[in-house]
Amino acid sequence: MMDNAPIRDAYRALLDAAATVADSDTRPVPPAGEWNADQILAHVTLINAATLAAVSSIAAGANTTYDNRTALDAWTIERVITLTGGNAGLRDRIRIQADALCALGGPMLSDAELDALVPTRLLSNGRVLADQCVSLRDLITGLAEAELPGHTEQLLALLPEGASAVA
Image: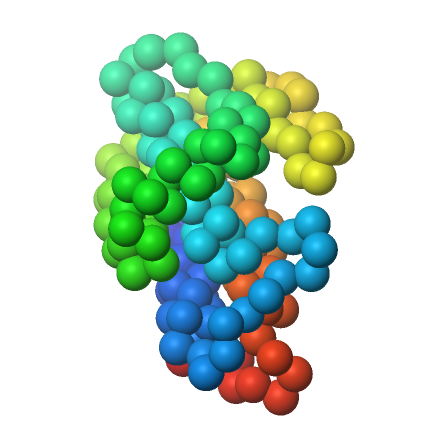
């Protein structure tokens, strides 16, 4: 069984950072070429959906793949922002997805399921990070150790200098 504490903590930190940015007195503007807070959160919801799909497929005994390209698509990101109603809706969706992933990804799956190899394609800033089989366990661990903390930092970087980074 997989320990869910790291991923729960990563989601908590991300949601705290998102609330801090949303509650800031200024409208955070990202550097040129970077995402704003809503775009970051929409991207995270899409990554969460892909992860939940992979977890569900493995639990159903089916083959699956993991590809984050849809979560990088500008049109899809804007569509998710519209469908969720913006920042508050995005944060609610992430909170619910986090609960679902923690319920499904840890106690429900056997070690054999968590060790199932998933053909994976991960891109970031136009670079291929992975184009190989990755265990479902490593996909979830990567979400907790790299993806969510990276987006937490990205959100906090939107705050003006001297602003509090605690919600």
